[in-house]
Amino acid sequence: MSAIRLLVLGAVRQHGRAHGYQVRNDLEYWGAHEWSNAKPGSIYHALKQMAKQGLLHAHEIAPSTVGGPPRTEYEITEKGTAEYLSLLRESLLAHDQKPDVLSAALGFMVDLDREEVLGLLQQRVRTLKQWRAAVTDHYTPEDGTAELGHIGEIMNFWLHSADAGAEWTQGLVERIRGGAYTFAGEGEPFVGVLTEGQENPYATGQRHPEDTR
Amino acid sequence: MSAIRLLVLGAVRQHGRAHGYQVRNDLEYWGAHEWSNAKPGSIYHALKQMAKQGLLHAHEIAPSTVGGPPRTEYEITEKGTAEYLSLLRESLLAHDQKPDVLSAALGFMVDLDREEVLGLLQQRVRTLKQWRAAVTDHYTPEDGTAELGHIGEIMNFWLHSADAGAEWTQGLVERIRGGAYTFAGEGEPFVGVLTEGQENPYATGQRHPEDTR
DNA sequence: GAGTTACTAGTCAAGTTTGACTACAGAGTC
DNA sequence: GACTCTGTAGTCAAACTTGACTAGTAACTC
Image 1 (tube, rainbow over the protein chains, first blue to last red):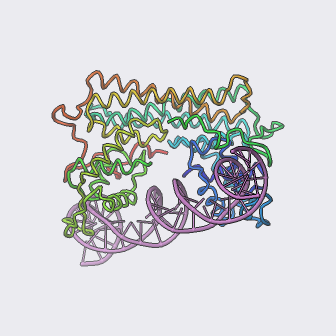
Image 2 (cartoon, rainbow over the protein chains, first blue to last red):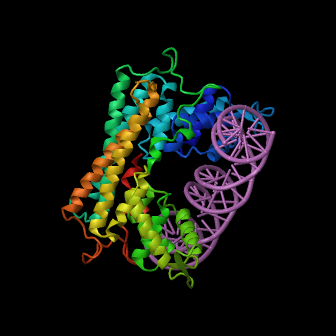
Image 3 (cartoon, rainbow over the protein chains, first blue to last red):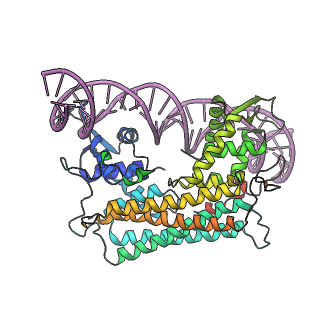
């Protein structure tokens, strides 16, 4: 599973009603084009696809207010909300390597309540540790026959990444337990989207630091 | 860029001549189906595509020796070798987040010589550190206006991953400098492929430890 | 005041990835 | 002896992703 569906559902949901360009702009604001496959084509495709599947409801809208082709506005359906929450929980939980999915989930974690997020993240840490143990067991059995040569570095790399991921997750758990951030049902939520007309400080033209390659 | 082309080119090259199933089996032996998109469909597609592009030469072969559809055997061309080495160097160098690309490159690094690999990896560490500095600079400017809320955790996660990656790469550099593994031009290479008839200890049927999810 | 650039909004074709499926052969088994 | 399971080898349609492109308006610039 790629992160695109979660990102798009979450963005539409935060707006209540959004057209493609708005979603696209939000994802850029979050830096998602840097760490996920949130390219325009993918976004518009996901919107259409999810509308077809009944996760979003498409309103055909008159020609855009500012030029360009006519807009379609999308609204999340009940089915879409269920899918969104399910994707979100799964993404926080999965020790599933792809970092883009976790990143997306971090951006939306405050849509769940604090206790649930803590539970999911702690489970995440446990699963990572189990996975680690299983892998080392499997590739270095008691009889010491493991002669992987440099191929072993691949495993080594994944183990190291898993350890780093577990450690970081543990840190996040502690920050959240310590009262950081505002979760569902805790009053005024943090506003993570751009409202119509607000300028985007991280717009593409601005050049992201990563572009120095 | 996904890792599939590098993986397939490298596998064919090690065999001298290989058919799709052989490549597929090698990649499974390396665990590539766990950490990359090396599914059968992708592998066969890549073989055909690269044959069309002149990176591989396709020999049409008589019906398979053991049943099933007729095989096609592939051999790497000069152009393919050039592409392979170029992909390999690029993958070792790129601080480009995708871990599957780096994993694939690790499996093939011994096709380059020791000094070159050391140079590439050290450059990798430097680039990671520069990237880190640029990101922190950009998102926490001197005027302290950065009010990212929980969105900041996304950046935090990437920074943490980059740090872990740099640290691990540094460790690898030291192991290689210390004489580990056998690189190009250093005598009998480590055999990382399965020869015809050799059984695969990590075959799918065996169940990988990751499957305990 | 004509040309160039930038921004808004989205489409499209080409390429890639996925997961399920086909087809054959040998080995066990009831 | 019919049935099921496993292994070999690969195809295919559907879905997804990519990057380049269209098209209109505003704003700047010389």
